[in-house]
Length: 354
Image (cartoon, rainbow, N blue to C red; front, side):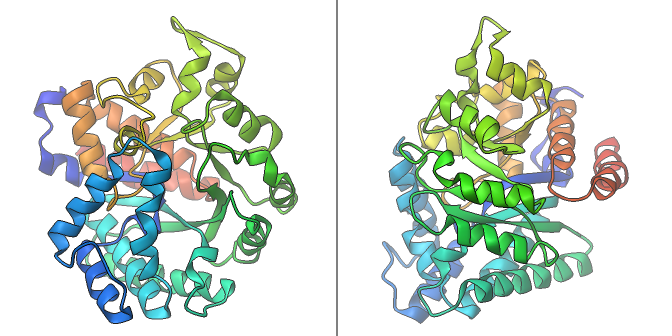
């Protein structure tokens, strides 16, 4: 099927899998307004549409640090049990409405303790909200499975605590681990002890790398820390010259290391210049295991359907390309092999065949 024959409704119905999506970056604007009013937090505006526009405009600075600063307002309404339950449940329902059949949601529990919740209470509450959302989505005929990635904030000193949480909750919905936050100046190897602990406990992890910092961050994430996937990774192209892969790029491609690529987000943070020239297309064509992701749906004003639409319209992607990145994502999910295989054979492939 050619790209010109894919309309928006058809794209929305396609089965999707997202591996890189932040809970605190995907709230509904109306929910932020309502919860902020309840807790007495002042927002830039109390009009939901205007707030959505404010987020999008504020994030279009081309600066990762300013992009991250927009999370002040979402985190402010995610400090109570009620706020976490609601935002987690709505998170799942919004994905289901967008055609997502598998997702991994990530967040840093240490950022949700200002209201008095302990770290384990934060994780338990989010899992309860996610479960409620999955039950409602299934009842509505749009089932979606959501696994959790717990994050440590790389510029703070609680990464090992977050890793301990991932170990403790790995049989309760937590499927893996990540470090998040400002990348430049905070190399992943600063937290090597946490990653060694996760490897000893057989907990898989991904690492944000190759976005605000270049090849050294990707090398460190993979070869020093042992990450199984790379969050973003757009700057792996710096190790590719005229289609010839350097040693690091060759390692990433040949060992099928998944790249969690987020086109719209990368434009906002200055890691890419346009959708048409975003590295995801060239890397796909070179045989890398690229996956398509939203990163932060509120902050980037996006959905998986929108990301697909942009690649179809501006980079010439076909249904076959969209199916390939969806299969890539499920293959690289942090869930057991038999469950990944069933998702691909029973859900993804039949959905694209239709």
